[in-house]
Length: 65
Image (cartoon, rainbow, N blue to C red; front, side):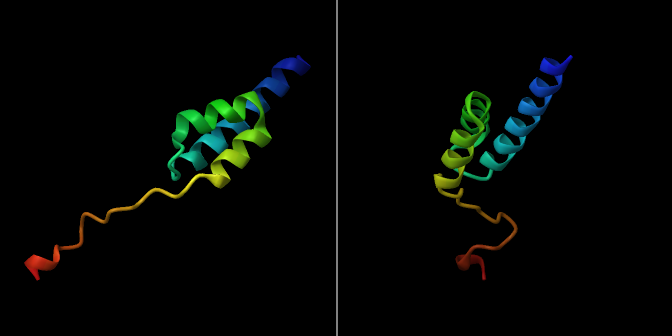
């Protein structure tokens, strides 16, 4: 019972790190995998990863203005 509880906690924390990784270049998969192996390695990898370039598709191009 205790193992199941800690396994669910580990998966939940790895999912949170993976969600944070979605906003970074590392992506969800790598962030989740690293955090599942070791939470601290996953957090450090995501924190060191660069943020994704966000492109706003609603803004008109300069040539259209």
